[in-house]
Each structure stands twice: as C-alpha cells, then as structure tokens.
Image (tube, rainbow, N blue to C red):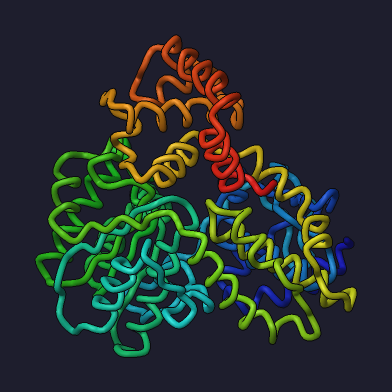
Length: 455
C-alpha cells in the first residue's frame, strides 16, 4: 500500500464521516505501513488512535479493502512529530473536535455520526435480541416516553450500538425537527472536561439539557470518574423531568458496573433494563445471509460457495462485528480475483483471524455453552449445588477451560465461584478418567469442542 492509495481512501471516507470529523480525525492520520494485514498509522496521541479505531475503524478497513489491499486490523504509533499533512502543518497538540453547536439539529455537530448501515431494516432479530429490538422500536415509533431510560446491555458485538443508531435514524425520519444526540460516554466526559478547561459550562449544559433524545453508548466508561458522574447525574435528571427520552448502553447491567454511583444505578434501574444475550448459531447464520444481500451490490461478481456461511456462523460465535469483517474479506477476495470462495479458500483467507478466534476462547464462553449443552442454568453450573446433574457439567467445563484456554488453575478456580484450585484439579482428573471409558461423556466433549472451535 502507498500514500496515494491511502489518499484515495481518505477522499472516500470524507463523504462518509462529514467534513468536521474528517478534518479532526481522518486527515491527521499519517500512513506508516501495511504488513501482514495490519494497517499502521502515526498519530499525535494514544487518545486519538483509540478514538479513530473505535468510531472510524470499520469504515477505514472497508475503504482500504475496497482498494484491493488485504487488511484485517488497525494499529497506531504515537508520533508527536509526524509528517505534516499536505494542507496543514503538523501540530503536537491534543486533537480537539470543533465545539458542538448547541442549537443544531440531528447532525454530526451535536454528536458522533450515525452509521448508515445500522437501521432497523438491517437488524436481524432472534430469540437473544427480540426483546431489545421490540423496546427499541417502541422508543423509535412512540411520541411519548414509555420508559426512561432504555438501558441495553450485553457483550461486544451483540447489537447494542446497532439498535441505538437504528433508533436515531427512525426518529430523524419521523421527527426531523427533534434535537437528537448520540455520543459515547467517553465523548461526554471529553466535552465536559473541555468545557471546564475553557470555562464554558453554560454552553455544555445548554447543549446536553436542551435536546429531545440523548443516546449514550458505553456508560461504563464514566464509572469511577466523580466529576463526570456528577454532571451526568444532573443532565439525566434534567432530561427526565422534561420528559425527554434517554437511551443508554453498556457491557454490564447498572448494578454490576464497579465505580458507578449508587444514585446513578438507582436512576438507571428505574427505566427498562434489557440484556442482549449471546447470539445463537441460527441468528448468526441469519445475519450472514442478510449481509450477503447487502454486500452483493458493493462487491459485483463476488461468489460465496456452499457451506461457507455455515462455517463462519459456527466458527465466529462471540462477535457479530468480527463475523461481518470476515464476510467482507471473503467478498473482497472473490470480487478482486473473480473466483468463488469455497470452504477451503475461506479457511485460507481467514487463517490469521481464525487463529485469533481460537486463542480467544474464554472461560465465560465455555461455561455458557456447557450450561446450554446440558440444559442447566449458568448460575447452577458455577454455583455450590453438588447434585450430579450440576456437578458433572461443572467438571466438564473445568476440564475444557484447562484444555482450551491458557488460564492458570487459580484463575479458573476464581471463575467457578471462587473455589480452591485443588477442586479444579480433581474435576479435571475425573473427566480425564471417565472420558476414557464413558462414550457418552466423550461425545459430549467432542460436541462442545466443535461448538467452541471449528475442527
């Protein structure tokens, strides 16, 4: 990859993210190199790199891949004196976005841009997310505030952000004059700190307390930050008193976020709190099938062979974003080389990504799949109950945790209700001994391994 190719990708990104975001975040990126699928940029601060990766990373990867480059992820190197952009001299100062206009309508001036692909039409509904989808639709379709806030929580890549963006798009279409702001909790804090530094708290309060709908992603970020929590609390109360809608998301329920003030937890729990569960195989396959329809126009001539979607749905089970990234790479490969991607080629194209997925098998995932396999509650698998119906699955999960992760016995013990590591050793030995003679147990282990790792 060359600077010229990156320049073309930059121009395409400008139309997606808007002029303000482009000048602040995309234009200052200095292309360093692209090796082994890792696209590296020089940035002026770690904050800037984190921000770009989080909010513009997917768009950058898509555009660079569209230029024919094999790219899997981004990397950033802090360089206070990078090569200056062609249109402006280099600066060593922390990047500061232009001050939002407090009275502007739904635009990027008030918050982060909405992703055009994140709409209700592109959201695939399954049992794991149907309640969250129904609640999001209620918020988007209603002229009255039914519950405040709507709090969505769940793991990474399960659809929380997609639903928030979908609400934003639907509200913008239904109520074009409404003032709607979508920000991350990190952005909220950043604007708050800047307002303090610039002695412009009145402008900050005017912006966040004079809107109709506030959407804050990743609320967990403000935990432990006392001043930001104080301002968030008052902003929250002000909007609720005005009967303005608030939608929030996090990777944990309000009461499970360490460092979050009790009064904020109480306020959050006063609304509708919904857990988005991990996706099922059927839902992941449905998502892939929907993406194939969308990608067809973007990648003309691309062909995906039989069994590839099923392979991806089995293999990449923890993160829908990674699932989409894998499919994007296969479409690009097929389109650029004018070749159908069969199962063998898919495994070759995604070799590095699949190795990463294999290494990232977690104890939480093992516990969840083991509980599902044996038809028991996750709490019972981890808990103290010693009945055989719970004890044997628990030992199976312990055995797989030792076999499929690099965690130590004490670490595994902590994930199983804080048991002693000798208990873990005993459980592992029991499964090793029994699986040699018990064909049913051996089959259970094989099925669980396949569910956790395509083999």
